[in-house]
Length: 282
Ligand SMILES: NC(=O)c1ccc[n+]([C@@H]2O[C@H](COP(=O)([O-])OP(=O)(O)OC[C@H]3O[C@@H](n4cnc5c(N)ncnc54)[C@H](OP(=O)(O)O)[C@@H]3O)[C@@H](O)[C@H]2O)c1
Image 1 (cartoon, rainbow, N blue to C red):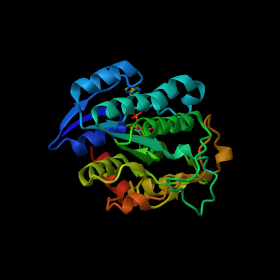
Image 2: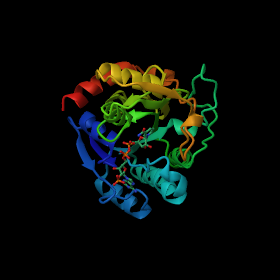
Image 3: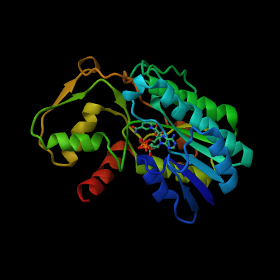
């Protein structure tokens, strides 16, 4: 099968490439080869290469910086997926797009979990632009998968790497303890994408994080325990740790829809163990 992967130098893309490379012909592009905001270039490229699948790993992911550059972020996260959807539709390709828990306002009681069809209401520029991207995909093609993920880490700058670095400095680390979600290993999301292709699950929108829930504080406790880091962790509130873009308190996504398709979703603890085996021994 011919698969086009956009944003191919990004963190998730690296895992996706590893997962789908066997037996498939991959066309890898980053912004220099194919800028997804350029509608004409996207159409021309897709019509020429004729991939059967397009996996869009390109995005504007600097959540705080996005608050100051709405237009740029929206071009990449909103218009870009729309361009890919139009091109995919034109040649009959299937579009796989990645979205985020930030499409929700996060105000749902933490005893509850967001379903795919729950009311969206992003409160950040990043979240608004990612919601725009979902709409662009849904309005421009029928043959799509949107995988909403959260708290992603893998081969790139991420929270685990930051904590491991801070943990070495022997100073107490303050970590937010009132935001709830599921850390998600890029390798496991890549596997979800791979299985979705292989099993040809029904098109649509799927919540796609690792299983189980924790807080950033709980996540850090587990990182330090597994990596034998002896460092004090101080739990703080979101109000004590203000960022330019407000983080959702509840990022807990229900995965029943994906599980019903027989897709494998490991727990976040199992995923973290596997990640650290790679990260600490490389
Ligand atoms: N990271 C998370 O915690 C998280 C959480 C939820 C959802 N997601 C979603 O998961 C997906 C993958 O995220 P990631 O962390 O792997 O992102 P990433 O590492 O930031 O990679 C994004 C890639 O897209 C490229 N790109 C930017 N603008 C482009 C354009 N106009 N045309 C083509 N490529 C462009 C970037 O290139 P440059 O680096 O050269 O700009 C980069 O290689 C994204 O859709 C993101 O919104 C991520």
